[in-house]
Each structure stands twice: as C-alpha cells, then as structure tokens.
Image (cartoon, rainbow, N blue to C red; front, side, top):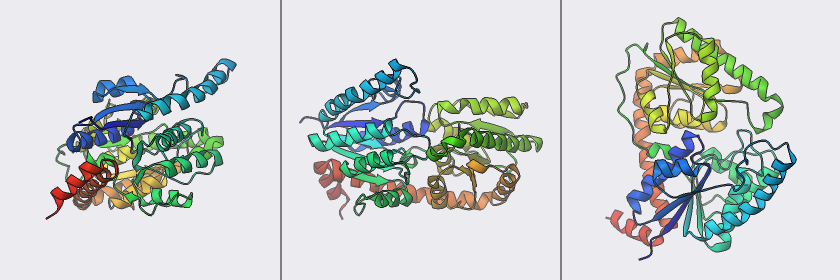
Length: 406
C-alpha cells in the first residue's frame, strides 16, 4: 500500500521551544498510531527540524529575509516577489500530501506583534491550497484570540474556514473564532499538545519552600495593538522582573533564568548584569524537555512565555504567571492556579513578591492539585488524538474505534 503522505506546517525550527514542542507531540502521535505515514515539513527552520526530528523539511518562505524589516528598495522588492513565489511553492507542496497538520502554536492569534503578510498570509495559502487540491488540513490544538486589525483578522478567519479540521487549546480560542464568524459547532477544545510529552521525574521540594526558583523571562514588548508603547512596556517589564529577582537573591534564594525563544537572550543578559550575584544563573535549553528538567528541580516557578507555564505546570511545580494574554490566564485557571497571575505589561515587583509568597505557602496543596489536573489533561489528549485519527485517517479511525469498543 502507498503510505499516507503527511505534512507538518508552521514556524518550526525557528528558535521557539513551544512551537517545536507541539511538533514533537504530534510526531509522537503519528509514530505511535500511524507508523506507516511518510512525514515531512514546510517550516521556518528546515535544517533544525531535519537534524532534530529526522524528517525531510522545506523552507517556509522563498525570501530568506522575510522576517527582517524591509527599508531598502531591494528588500521591499524581494519581499513582494516572495509573496508570489510562496503562493506557488505552498500550492505545490500541499498538493503532494494527503494530510497537512498545523501542530498547536498560536496561529490564529495576534497577541504578539504580527504583520498580516507574514505568517497569517502563509497560513491562508496553506488552507486555500488544501481546499483547492483536496488535501485535508488540520489545525490541531491551536491558539486563537480576538484580532483588531482587519487584514490580519480576514486572513485568519478564512484560514480557519478553509481547514478540514480544527481543535483549540482553550475555550477562549474557540470563542474567538466563533466571534470572527467561523462555525465552531464541531470543533473540540483540548489541553495544549505539550501536555502529551513525557514528564521528567521531579525533585524533592524544600519544606517549607526555600530552594531554587526558576524565572522564565521573555523579550516582551506588548501585543500587536501596543506597537506605539512597545519600548515603554518592555522597560517596565524588565525593570519589574529585575527587581523581583534581586529581592529573591537578597533573601538567599537561588534563581535560575530560563527562556523559551532565542530572542529572549538579551533579557537574560540584562538581568545578569543588573543582579551581579553567584545565586543567579542562566540555563541553556534547546527543547521543552530541557525546560521541564530545569523546572522539575525547582521549588517554585515564575514565568512569562506560555510554554514556560505549560512546562512548569506539567511537572507539577507551583507556578506564578506573568501573564501577557488571556491564554495564560485560561491555562492557569484550567490547572487550578487562577489566583496566581500577574500582568506582564504592568509588573509591580512588590505585588509580585506578595503573590509569590502566598503561592509558596500553599505549595504542598497546589502540587497535589497539579498532579490531578495533569492526569485529566493526558486523558483529554488521548481522546483528541483519537478524534484526529477519525477525521484525517478514516480507515485507521474505524480500526481504532473497533479496538476501543467493548
């Protein structure tokens, strides 16, 4: 039999650990449930994806300077030409596949600065090509949010409408797409795909808490609607986070700084320069597994990036979110820690320290809560993958249903 041809699509291999973790979870599902499938990728960092995940990969954009600001005539011309070339390249790639999966990621949101002719345009090309050539396109466990700018909103709405299958990582995402005019009546909500990854063994926490603290930082400049205040927001975030870390060090706590994207490195460097102490160190992480290993050894985590939060909650460590979008608040609520969110755009170090101490006072109780919520998440993702098989691999889905029937 000819193997099913499966493509994976997105800003994968580009330095964002959360995106790559979502890909890892989907590849794990494919290798376990559909080992006969021939898998390749159309992605941002094909060399990284091929080296790490051992699948063929093609560059997402023809023009290599796609995500650099174009100010000169040559760059502007290159970007414009690239849009036309990418329309053909994407269509040709999609046509070679039976199924294309977009694994997780916030592909239907603009909670961070985003141009409509960047990834939203690329996603629209994918979904339109799938509809044109009869290739089943699945948006699996993706994030969505209300979008203010009309061009971006239109591209996102049509991408979702043209997809064969959609599921979301929280109710807020499904609600956002419904409000944009997408029929979500058959769309499911499931935990973030990263909850399907293996969980490392956790260390023994201090009693009472007084051991290491992991602080996940982010190159945060506000949302897509905050471009005019981006530097002000970034400075306030950096100053508040730095002051919080300095206070922990004055209390004798070890602090481990973590990132979730290559672009976060300057924030780590700024904090290390400002807080000159051997108690503050920075971790080098290349995957969500690395992040989870770091967090599993901590008593408490304070984190900004969404997938830093996912990793901390998955390993069952009490966590405080520096929240920059509703998705972070929704995740913390799902895992029983709704009271421990602090706005990333308005970091108040004194208030953050109060919340941190309140969190640590309930450490043992919250660890038990996280253990229970994680078991529920695993069961829900098992159901999600079964539904995905039924939607994208009809023959295999029928066999799966027979195996599960009494």
